Image 1 (cartoon, one colour):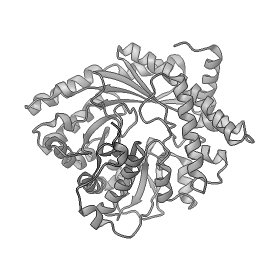
Image 2: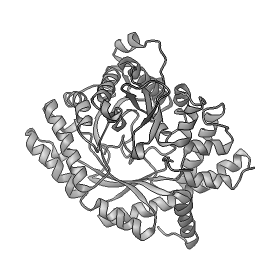
Image 3: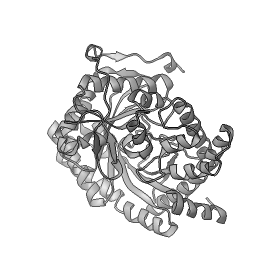
Image 4: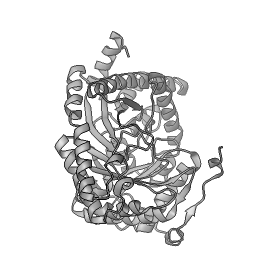
Length: 453
């Protein structure tokens, strides 16, 4: 891959003035050959394989960062969904394995390790159930382990038994970390139509279709897009789309260059570029502020979904032209606690939970990093998950829920999570019950869109 001098100059400007960064370089590692009926042997094999493959990940990424002057914010690992190798392990052993993953992440100096996961969109195996039962303790007793659970796909429908369990698990995870505002829930994502090559946390896992090891890259650039739009304040919406598209092309080119260099030096295949715009709490590094630059007085007002759809489409078109290997989630994240514009929208009563849910129809994922009233019931949490899963299932797209019912907090209070996770206003939920609907269980059948063969 070659890069012109003018592109290098533009990249330098984007880094220095517009908060461009490589949000994550994530190494995916296959752990299927670590399975063993003897738990202690499996536990050791998992630790040894992860620490062997990723031993140079952090140092290599940091060296490339210094050489090229583009910040690589996170170095992460994704692994085979752990439920697939648990076999006859007990719940206590599953929790012990989570601690082993945490120890590996700390020893390697990586920010997160994702893949403490189960795929239960059609049914729940013995290993799946062991992992689900272990989740609250596993997440509350580790710092860097991230978990995800697939409860629905377009091809299979929605496993409402799993959805019901997830409502209980999220509530219990929050209670076990109530001294930290329920932070365990920030490391848990519930998916519909999850992808196998997602480099972003907390939902990353190394899927069955992946190779032995791979490098996947997620590049961030809301600040770059925002600054590009500010230079065209009077353009029509077609011109707005074109500006975003061209900017996404440049961001993706920079990200893929660095990703391929890291992969080559680690002697691991380069996998995909995830095009998702990922915000931070830094000034002018907000997806919401891009939508407001397009013309909304405040994110959440009428027109928000149309503006988000325009932006997402343009990002994908520009990024797809810049890379032959686009994957992951690719679009735009709208995590409330990590985006100053989203936070302000809620504070100003412009952005509601219902509007956020509607926005997920056209963005990358779903309800992300949303603080909820601590009194929310498990059934209501399950119903929120079911609604998001239905959006994903019907529209053949990935949707997800990462919500934090903050113990002891009420609607309108502000909660601090710290670091990249930021802060969030606590949002209320509909007071009417969904208990009877959730308690029915069973499976919501796959839609007609599933019959594509």
